Image (cartoon, rainbow, N blue to C red):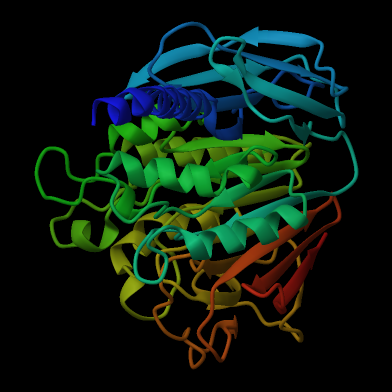
Length: 421
């Protein structure tokens, strides 16, 4: 027995060393930058493209981290990142500015001690031509999407279309009080978000739902993990000749019962939106205005919150917003152009003239379990599918036209329309 123990000791030592090496290796891999996503700054210098913000997470080991970037894979510039603490991880973000128009940039983030991310790339804002926007909503990890598996398929498809950035209609996660939900979403969608800036608004699942002083308040994890313009809840940005305005609709259904629906006329946020739309009206460089939110203004069924529509619609109509995008209901619905609550007469369901009214779209099926069919019987519905599906949108915008296409999870074209100026 003694001889056996003696012969066993070297083997145990090797296994122990190997085990420790594996733990150390795994820790090293986990220390590598993760949850990498881009976003666009709200303000930019005239004649220069929008600065691009890089955000990522790393395990809690301390030390500085950086972004190396440049127009070649050798990435000649370096920017030190700001650091914040979130539970058992650090969150870093860095602003890439003084970019050149229409240029492809390569980047890595991290450090020599903590490890570097893979090499990613993005295109800066062009000064002319057409740009492309990805459209997703309701990626929440509920039934049939518990680990964002449906969302992964959708984001992988959007990446094929190489959008300049992606708009998210909210309900990013199913329960915003759980940090792991946010982490998992950003991990699953990283390959898209690392090359296409993610510009999101909050849904009712992303904020406090219980009545009280924190009702409709965003969870801190959202502010820690995302890096968006302004207060990150209601914000705007200009990209080429388009003004994009994201607004927070809160928990509109529950808020309607207590008189707390967002954007009450005369409120600070109402005045802010009116001012933002007025600035877009006066800016001769702006050709299109797109507003996106979580709760739809027009919708079929239980997501149709009358008080939300009463609060927001007058501003959209006053300023002739071209397109209003929303989620919440897990369907795809597209309305005809609407003007003062009335459908604009048009000979085609897929070709429209700019300036005659607003087209309202509900596009909330990028992962969240589909909730049925759209309101095909509504007189102002231009299109809704005849089958339940997951979907995403791709929008191409130039100074003369805006083309919107919708695809299902198998990348089959479901709907399209064009607005021309």
